[in-house]
Image 1: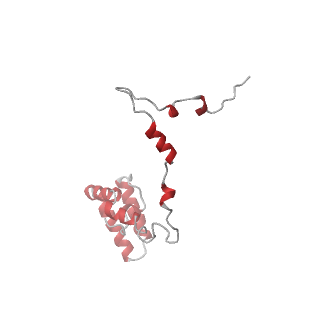
Image 2: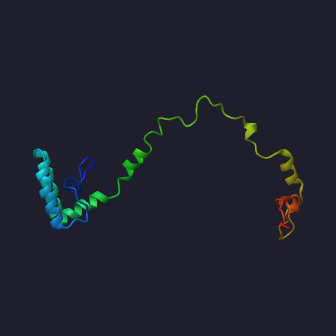
Image 3: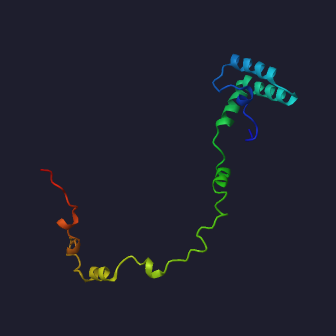
Length: 140
């Protein structure tokens, strides 16, 4: 069922849980309220779909079917190509600002002795001390 076409349930003003007598009553009510030939034809078509159990199952499947993933992705990313990723007026940061490690720390890592055989030695500057713990107030 195309997306522009109304659901037979919407045309008759009922829910998918409606019983056959409720479908018939809704059809008669919608037909009485319809103004114009197109509205009457829509009511009749909806009633024919919902009266027949095979067609009703088809309408239910099409109503609640998952949307097409390709069209959904196109709609979700429709405006992405229109906006620039980076603002053109923002200058790029200098390479020196992107360096995270300091030379002294990296040099200290290279001067520490390698791990001994079979065990891994934690460098002394990374050993746990009381300085790394936050201060704690002891209640009296």
